[in-house]
Image (cartoon, rainbow, N blue to C red):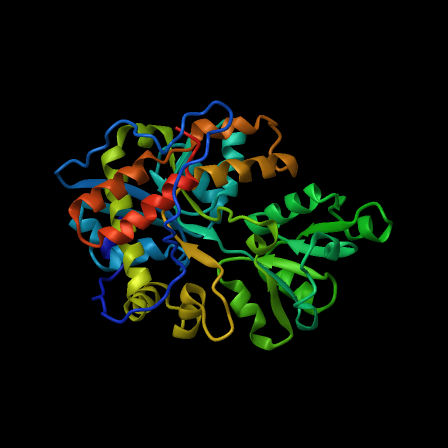
Length: 393
């Protein structure tokens, strides 16, 4: 493992401002917790950061720009400010390589994925979701002439939809359609034979999905990680919708997950990690030019792409919202969707409750508000926290 400072070269910030896909709603008042779980919004045990330099081990999946807050925090030295050395290991094998490392304690934090963590929890692994990375983030790609054709569940009847497993948008859309009374299949012939109203067909990659739409093999596909912007550049396809626009609520994309041992033994390090990341959230919301440069330097991606997926560009609306809020209520609902869709064999939907925590994020917000600088921004996040986190430990 190498220190994050060695992997990610520092970059000075800019004073340019812009409107980013970072949530800062001020609506408050927590709803009652389900399943007898105590509200995470109530005050829990105090978490205090140690004053000495500490270390935290993370695993990253390539140089994906969706970890924007981590990128910015690293580039601007915020981890060092908080007396934290973040050691990063980048893997090329995706979740099949990263998840065992998280589960066995080789690393402390994986800031990607919600599906893998939920799947491992459903299989009995003791992992904990303690923060967010991206909320929403999914896009439905269709032939350009069909971009305005999907407004209600009935519009999906007879459609064949390509998807890949590690993408949350198709899962919440599938669950919504089932609740709206549509019968779901998983093969094209299910629709052809009248055995299903709509079919969700698993393909091996986002590229394969988009190609299937372009070739007329399927009617729609779901992509994430800003790949909608890439897909529409040829003028053949378009973004029809983002799932939250149809299902009526936001949903979790990538979460920050840890193992139980690190959660119990490294609370100070996790707190410092979140404080630095939340500081980066402020920058993403208020320093568009500088943030774009930071992400470009880290990812090697061109400016137009980075701007589009982070802030939106021209007619393209950015799908990803970069935020550290764990959104335990939404994770609980998403876990239930996975159970209902048959993605998790254990049908106990409450199992996830013991594997979610929002106290570290709350302590980070409290710390930043107490410091005073940019307190109004962090108070806005706190108000949203009260609404989004009514479940978990």
